[in-house]
Image (cartoon, rainbow, N blue to C red):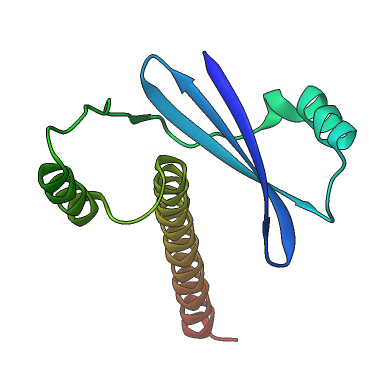
Length: 135
């Protein structure tokens, strides 16, 4: 297993991206630090919180092969951008994780909405029955 951490400034906060490669698959996790962290603070964070990090689902990484000539290299780069879009593998993995979390949130909120609707329906039914009973 190979792991790396990249810290950079993403306005207005300092952000760290943990990348973990295992068996040719990449998974990432994004952490917001806030103010510019010192080296020892980053090291302390890694030691204390690495096993608590929630990594994205692993994605397959294709190995790069050298192109024969500049025109072919240009064509391949254009095709690659059309197929995968702009961004690094880490950014794509983070996007995939964001999409999965979004669908999960939608499903949970849909279930909550249905439960609330069912509860209101049952409340209406009990009120109807109370009215029909008389005094």
